[in-house]
Image (cartoon, rainbow, N blue to C red; front, side, top):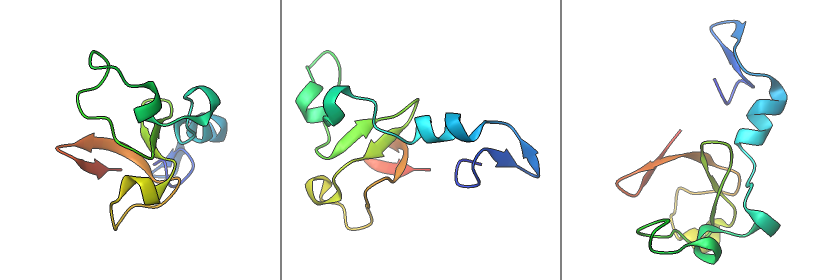
Length: 84
C-alpha cells in the first residue's frame, strides 16, 4: 500500500501527502537515531536510520552497513531486519 502511494486493492486509504510524510525522516535537522538516542529511548541505535511517521527510514545506507539497504527505504525493524 505504501509503495502504491496509499492505494490498496484499488481503494485509496492514505493521501499521497501522508505516505510521503511516513517515508520522510522527521528527526530534527535530518539527524539519525544515533544522534538522538538515549538508553531510555532505544536499546540498540542504528546508524544511518531516522524515523518517519510510524516507520524507520534509511537516511544513509553506507552508515547502516546492510548490503540490502538503500537511502529512502522504510519499514519497521524486527530482530535487526527491516520489513516493509
